[in-house]
Length: 292
Image 1 (tube, helix red, strand yellow):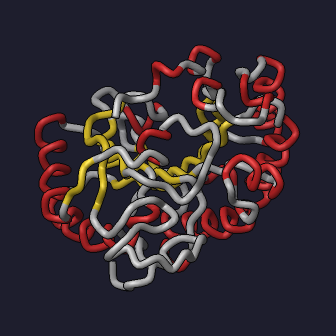
Image 2: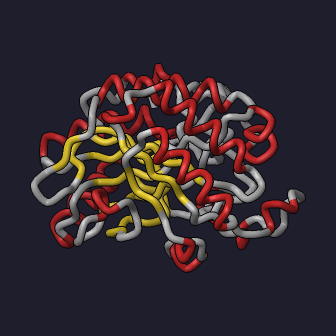
């Protein structure tokens, strides 16, 4: 990290992560909970051999339904130096022949990841996937230009009220719009290899939440107006599970998404002309959450 007082993400918490932790819950060192092949991403990301995922601990959002809460909020993980983390990533490539390197929730480590990715790019040709919440600053993203091949951002909310209620980020919409435009500027339209694996471009994810169907429809409209939809892919997810939100105060989050809710969003996406990846209801199961 170049700056003593952290300004990496839109929180601008100005924490001294040399001696303490930021809003994200972590300090200067990389904290990682899992480095392994992952088979449950979108088909062009996981392929047959899996995506080489690095799950970072900590997060700059506070989603009350987070399925990775043990690592995003609980701080579960192991400290790594930059050299050791690069070594582990190279071993992952060598031992498992993964299709790409997939950095999960990396936003709060952007500054430290820039030199690591520069080293990685000089040593392997696999695509680098930036798998994030979409809540990122444009200034930080610009440092990744040329280092990231595939952006895999969430677009969680159209409503600032919902974003504040469920994720503690009332400014989510404006921040995510600016971030996603910058991501698209860097990587452009989607490209795939002869096996159908994504090598460059963007897949924008949206998770349909129970009781929030209208917000999902607005999200789709915003994405359509924001980006050339033929250049991107949409991942419309039905995998919400209440198992991780049963202790929150919002009763609608204590159930799964209905077929009507998801099918309404799916029909809207198809009518708008989106191409992409859609889930069956069987995905709404906590068994799809990795062991951290």
